[in-house]
Length: 233
Image (cartoon, rainbow, N blue to C red; front, side, top):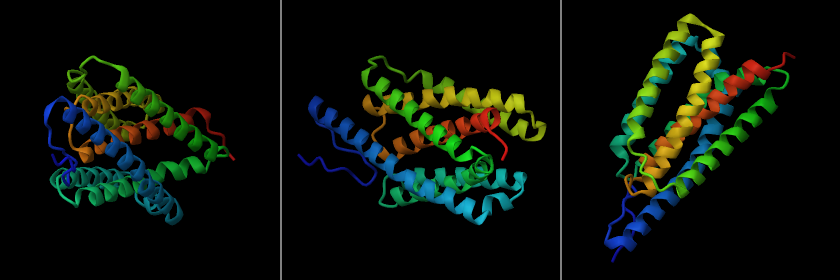
């Protein structure tokens, strides 16, 4: 029987053994594509800092560009996930996200200990990912039901974040960052468990979900470290 993946990462299933092979292949492809997606993210962040492109935009315009670009890319990824264009579109999205992250990265790099804060945030994000991936591999409980609660929490975070754009409260920003780390860490667990349970059979969709969670965890950690541990030069 042919078990080659389709363009979107789905595999034909025949019996328990094939189903297990399918899940392992989708999970492996998700991890590989997730690792690859870090390259354009770092490149986008570096280019944004080097050119000052993100910093040149006003905060309001930057937020509009970010929301419009992110949702536009996610719509395109959904439309192309079952074709050969899916991976390039996803990688284009991760470059865009890196570019948008450069405003925060540039601000933190302006601190006296900025480089070490970025490395600490990167290490913390990696530790959270490894912890959630390990937990997903040993948990036998179905976590599907938690998805709707996490989605509600994410929407509330988004609304509160937009509100804080106008309020400019440091205390609220710290609170939202802590909540975001918790919610998106749980999203990593939920999304990886869906792949391992065979509920998600498209590795492009799986990669997108986990990538967005990692992005938000890193961004929130970096915000917290910059606010609480940053030193002026």
